[in-house]
Image 1 (cartoon, rainbow, N blue to C red):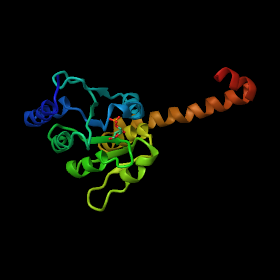
Image 2 (image 1 turned 135 degrees about the horizontal axis):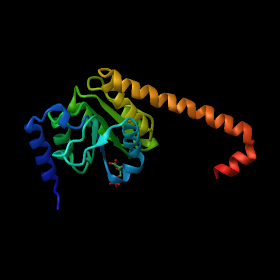
Image 3 (image 1 turned 90 degrees about the vertical axis):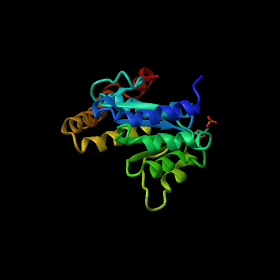
Image 4 (image 1 turned 135 degrees about the vertical axis):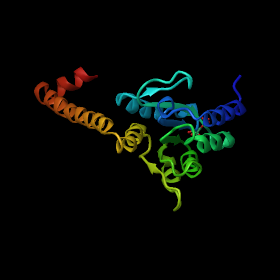
Length: 203
Ligand code: RP5
Protein backbone atom coordinates (compact mmCIF):
# COMPACT_ATOMS: atom_id res chain seq x y z
CA UNK A 1 0.00 0.00 0.00
CA UNK A 2 1.28 3.47 -0.87
CA UNK A 3 1.35 5.86 2.10
CA UNK A 4 1.46 9.65 2.20
CA UNK A 5 5.01 9.33 3.53
CA UNK A 6 5.93 7.27 0.43
CA UNK A 7 4.67 10.05 -1.84
CA UNK A 8 6.46 12.74 0.17
CA UNK A 9 9.65 10.68 -0.16
CA UNK A 10 9.07 10.27 -3.89
CA UNK A 11 8.70 14.02 -4.47
CA UNK A 12 11.72 14.79 -2.32
CA UNK A 13 13.91 12.17 -3.96
CA UNK A 14 12.84 13.31 -7.45
CA UNK A 15 13.74 16.88 -6.48
CA UNK A 16 17.17 15.70 -5.33
CA UNK A 17 17.83 13.76 -8.54
CA UNK A 18 18.26 16.87 -10.62
CA UNK A 19 17.03 15.20 -13.81
CA UNK A 20 17.52 17.08 -17.08
CA UNK A 21 14.51 19.20 -18.13
CA UNK A 22 13.55 16.90 -21.00
CA UNK A 23 13.06 14.04 -18.52
CA UNK A 24 10.68 15.85 -16.17
CA UNK A 25 6.98 16.72 -16.56
CA UNK A 26 6.35 20.32 -17.62
CA UNK A 27 2.90 20.70 -16.08
CA UNK A 28 1.62 19.31 -12.79
CA UNK A 29 -2.11 18.66 -12.48
CA UNK A 30 -3.26 18.23 -8.89
CA UNK A 31 -6.73 17.94 -7.39
CA UNK A 32 -8.10 17.70 -3.88
CA UNK A 33 -9.88 14.39 -4.43
CA UNK A 34 -10.37 11.78 -7.10
CA UNK A 35 -14.02 12.89 -6.97
CA UNK A 36 -12.75 16.05 -8.72
CA UNK A 37 -11.41 14.03 -11.65
CA UNK A 38 -14.44 14.25 -13.94
CA UNK A 39 -14.22 18.05 -13.73
CA UNK A 40 -10.43 18.17 -13.84
CA UNK A 41 -10.23 15.84 -16.85
CA UNK A 42 -10.60 18.93 -19.05
CA UNK A 43 -7.01 19.88 -18.20
CA UNK A 44 -5.89 16.44 -19.39
CA UNK A 45 -7.96 16.84 -22.56
CA UNK A 46 -6.56 20.28 -23.40
CA UNK A 47 -2.99 19.19 -22.79
CA UNK A 48 -3.35 16.01 -24.85
CA UNK A 49 -5.10 17.99 -27.62
CA UNK A 50 -1.91 20.08 -27.67
CA UNK A 51 0.30 17.02 -27.97
CA UNK A 52 1.38 16.71 -24.33
CA UNK A 53 1.88 13.18 -22.94
CA UNK A 54 0.95 12.10 -19.42
CA UNK A 55 3.90 10.88 -17.35
CA UNK A 56 2.99 7.82 -15.30
CA UNK A 57 6.52 6.66 -14.51
CA UNK A 58 9.29 9.15 -13.74
CA UNK A 59 11.85 6.64 -15.06
CA UNK A 60 10.14 6.37 -18.42
CA UNK A 61 9.88 9.96 -19.64
CA UNK A 62 8.05 10.57 -22.92
CA UNK A 63 9.61 12.84 -25.51
CA UNK A 64 8.13 16.31 -25.96
CA UNK A 65 5.92 18.21 -23.56
CA UNK A 66 4.44 16.24 -20.70
CA UNK A 67 2.29 16.51 -17.59
CA UNK A 68 1.60 14.52 -14.46
CA UNK A 69 -1.55 14.00 -12.38
CA UNK A 70 -1.88 13.54 -8.62
CA UNK A 71 -4.48 13.77 -5.86
CA UNK A 72 -3.21 16.12 -3.15
CA UNK A 73 -5.65 17.15 -0.45
CA UNK A 74 -5.04 20.43 1.38
CA UNK A 75 -7.11 19.45 4.40
CA UNK A 76 -6.41 15.69 4.62
CA UNK A 77 -2.77 15.64 3.50
CA UNK A 78 -1.29 19.11 4.15
CA UNK A 79 2.17 17.52 4.40
CA UNK A 80 1.76 16.10 0.89
CA UNK A 81 0.63 19.49 -0.41
CA UNK A 82 3.75 21.09 1.13
CA UNK A 83 6.02 18.43 -0.33
CA UNK A 84 4.43 18.65 -3.78
CA UNK A 85 4.55 22.44 -3.96
CA UNK A 86 7.93 22.91 -2.35
CA UNK A 87 9.62 20.40 -4.66
CA UNK A 88 7.75 21.47 -7.81
CA UNK A 89 10.51 23.70 -9.22
CA UNK A 90 13.29 21.22 -8.43
CA UNK A 91 11.27 18.44 -10.05
CA UNK A 92 11.25 20.48 -13.26
CA UNK A 93 7.62 21.62 -13.34
CA UNK A 94 7.02 24.93 -15.11
CA UNK A 95 3.33 25.36 -14.25
CA UNK A 96 0.90 23.73 -11.83
CA UNK A 97 -2.84 23.36 -12.41
CA UNK A 98 -4.59 22.93 -9.07
CA UNK A 99 -8.28 22.15 -8.66
CA UNK A 100 -10.41 21.78 -5.58
CA UNK A 101 -14.05 21.80 -4.64
CA UNK A 102 -16.07 22.76 -1.60
CA UNK A 103 -16.62 26.23 -0.17
CA UNK A 104 -13.11 26.41 1.21
CA UNK A 105 -11.06 25.21 -1.76
CA UNK A 106 -7.60 25.90 -0.40
CA UNK A 107 -5.38 23.68 -2.55
CA UNK A 108 -4.88 26.14 -5.45
CA UNK A 109 -3.99 29.17 -3.35
CA UNK A 110 -1.89 27.29 -0.79
CA UNK A 111 0.02 25.69 -3.66
CA UNK A 112 0.51 29.12 -5.25
CA UNK A 113 1.93 30.40 -1.99
CA UNK A 114 4.20 27.40 -1.33
CA UNK A 115 5.46 27.05 -4.90
CA UNK A 116 5.85 30.80 -5.51
CA UNK A 117 7.06 32.11 -7.97
CA UNK A 118 5.98 29.08 -10.03
CA UNK A 119 2.75 29.96 -11.89
CA UNK A 120 -0.34 28.18 -10.61
CA UNK A 121 -3.64 27.98 -12.48
CA UNK A 122 -6.52 27.43 -10.07
CA UNK A 123 -9.69 25.54 -10.99
CA UNK A 124 -12.74 25.93 -8.75
CA UNK A 125 -14.27 22.48 -9.10
CA UNK A 126 -17.68 23.75 -8.02
CA UNK A 127 -19.46 27.09 -8.35
CA UNK A 128 -19.26 27.57 -4.58
CA UNK A 129 -15.44 27.23 -4.73
CA UNK A 130 -14.94 30.28 -6.96
CA UNK A 131 -14.52 32.89 -4.21
CA UNK A 132 -11.98 30.86 -2.26
CA UNK A 133 -9.91 30.14 -5.38
CA UNK A 134 -9.84 33.64 -6.84
CA UNK A 135 -9.70 35.44 -3.50
CA UNK A 136 -5.93 35.27 -3.03
CA UNK A 137 -4.59 38.16 -0.95
CA UNK A 138 -1.84 40.39 -2.38
CA UNK A 139 1.59 38.80 -2.65
CA UNK A 140 1.30 35.28 -4.04
CA UNK A 141 -1.10 35.44 -6.95
CA UNK A 142 -2.59 32.66 -8.97
CA UNK A 143 -4.35 32.66 -12.30
CA UNK A 144 -7.84 31.21 -12.08
CA UNK A 145 -10.44 29.94 -14.49
CA UNK A 146 -14.19 29.82 -14.00
CA UNK A 147 -15.86 26.98 -12.13
CA UNK A 148 -15.27 23.70 -13.89
CA UNK A 149 -13.31 25.23 -16.76
CA UNK A 150 -10.35 22.93 -16.42
CA UNK A 151 -9.93 22.76 -20.21
CA UNK A 152 -9.10 26.46 -20.07
CA UNK A 153 -6.64 25.74 -17.26
CA UNK A 154 -4.84 23.33 -19.59
CA UNK A 155 -4.73 25.99 -22.29
CA UNK A 156 -3.47 28.59 -19.81
CA UNK A 157 -0.68 26.30 -18.66
CA UNK A 158 0.37 25.80 -22.27
CA UNK A 159 0.20 29.56 -22.85
CA UNK A 160 2.78 30.08 -20.09
CA UNK A 161 5.10 27.59 -21.82
CA UNK A 162 4.40 29.02 -25.29
CA UNK A 163 5.81 32.44 -24.41
CA UNK A 164 9.17 30.76 -24.91
CA UNK A 165 8.27 28.33 -27.69
CA UNK A 166 6.88 29.47 -31.07
CA UNK A 167 6.10 25.87 -32.05
CA UNK A 168 3.81 25.42 -29.04
CA UNK A 169 2.27 28.84 -29.76
CA UNK A 170 1.43 27.51 -33.25
CA UNK A 171 -0.25 24.46 -31.74
CA UNK A 172 -2.35 26.77 -29.56
CA UNK A 173 -3.27 28.83 -32.64
CA UNK A 174 -4.20 25.68 -34.58
CA UNK A 175 -6.44 24.48 -31.75
CA UNK A 176 -8.11 27.89 -31.65
CA UNK A 177 -8.62 27.76 -35.42
CA UNK A 178 -10.16 24.27 -35.15
CA UNK A 179 -12.72 25.56 -32.68
CA UNK A 180 -13.48 28.48 -34.99
CA UNK A 181 -13.94 26.13 -37.96
CA UNK A 182 -16.23 24.00 -35.78
CA UNK A 183 -18.63 26.95 -35.42
CA UNK A 184 -18.80 27.42 -39.21
CA UNK A 185 -19.44 23.73 -39.72
CA UNK A 186 -22.23 23.45 -37.16
CA UNK A 187 -23.76 26.71 -38.33
CA UNK A 188 -23.95 25.50 -41.91
CA UNK A 189 -25.28 22.13 -40.75
CA UNK A 190 -28.07 23.73 -38.69
CA UNK A 191 -29.01 26.02 -41.54
CA UNK A 192 -29.12 23.36 -44.25
CA UNK A 193 -30.80 20.59 -42.23
CA UNK A 194 -33.22 22.89 -40.45
CA UNK A 195 -33.87 22.91 -36.72
CA UNK A 196 -36.06 19.81 -36.45
CA UNK A 197 -33.76 17.49 -38.39
CA UNK A 198 -30.64 18.92 -36.80
CA UNK A 199 -32.03 18.29 -33.30
CA UNK A 200 -33.23 14.80 -34.15
CA UNK A 201 -29.88 13.83 -35.70
CA UNK A 202 -27.99 15.26 -32.74
CA UNK A 203 -30.03 13.35 -30.09
C1 RP5 B 1 -12.23 19.04 -1.60
O1 RP5 B 1 -13.33 18.44 -1.02
C2 RP5 B 1 -11.94 18.24 -2.84
O2 RP5 B 1 -11.31 19.03 -3.78
C3 RP5 B 1 -13.30 17.77 -3.27
O3 RP5 B 1 -13.84 18.63 -4.25
C4 RP5 B 1 -14.16 17.87 -2.01
C5 RP5 B 1 -14.72 16.55 -1.59
O4 RP5 B 1 -13.67 15.61 -1.42
P1 RP5 B 1 -14.01 14.06 -1.18
O5 RP5 B 1 -14.97 13.99 -0.05
O6 RP5 B 1 -14.58 13.52 -2.46
O7 RP5 B 1 -12.70 13.43 -0.88
O8 RP5 B 1 -11.13 19.05 -0.78
